[in-house]
Length: 148
Image (cartoon, rainbow, N blue to C red; front, side):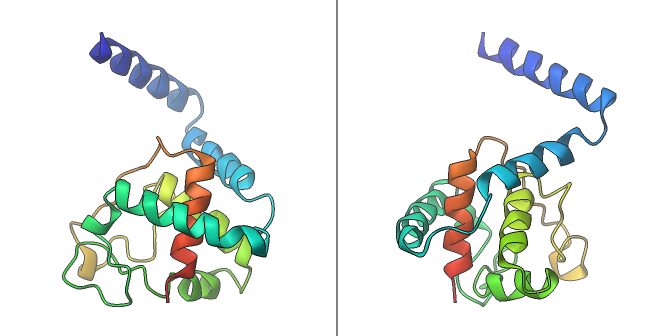
């Protein structure tokens, strides 16, 4: 029964993508705006970061990404100092930078990182994370944003 549900869901997604080839982009854009209508209140950040650390681990992100500035032989880019790198690419706009991270985590094929396709990361491909909810994405982003 579960296989049938998965097949039907995939068929519906394919049909939607055929009607609107930008459906994945549009969905990620809407999710980013809902996850980050504004920057989090300073008092809320510690709890968001802690929950984000838990999600980062439960989603097995550490299998490919280190939380330090060094890659440590892992397939994906290191997460340490991510906020600085994202801010540089988004003109110092912390809200837009966080929204981009939500979109990238949600669908890295539609919103690729600057590392995508480079020789250093050839063969590494981050899977989409469509099961994560807005709240979880916000928490993960706040955790990543905090890494030195």
